[in-house]
Image 1 (cartoon, rainbow, N blue to C red):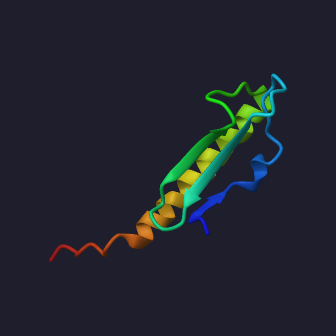
Image 2 (cartoon, helix red, strand yellow; image 1 turned 120 degrees about the horizontal axis):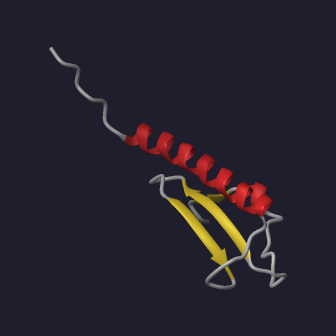
Length: 80
């Protein structure tokens, strides 16, 4: 079982050239790292709408990653 959780909103994002290339944005639930994968090739051509969708997915992943790492950070001592 993978500790990465993919953003389901990208399920229909495909290469604009019609090559079947896919993009995936996922967050690691244990350490809060964000993975951006381009599947089946080394690059992907996106329409403007799909590029915006990927950008939003990356922003959501960054927010989720921050909350994961914040939960893992030890409490900071208060100044006396």
